[in-house]
Image (cartoon, rainbow, N blue to C red; front, side, top):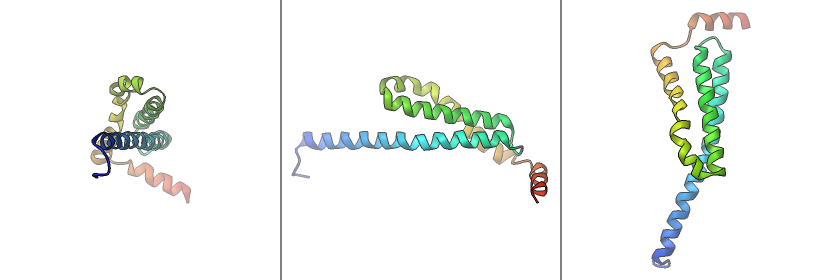
Length: 116
């Protein structure tokens, strides 16, 4: 890298760090959309508690708000991050519910029987 000066190398490093941050924010749009849709599906299903669906949909909405605020006003997004990521606990609650309790097998079999 002797073709570049130290200042140019530092500028390139900063550029790629900023590019990575923007790419990560774009990927969080997809993750927030996923959380929102999965939350709606859990709310409509009878296999898991509806409160998990509501919390997951709310966390997806918070992720989407965070992403769009990050693009529009990064200074505001930096102040919102601690508050807007708190609903992300819903993902942990869903994982714990699935590990400890699981789905309601009786309702699952009833739905499968009704679909035939």
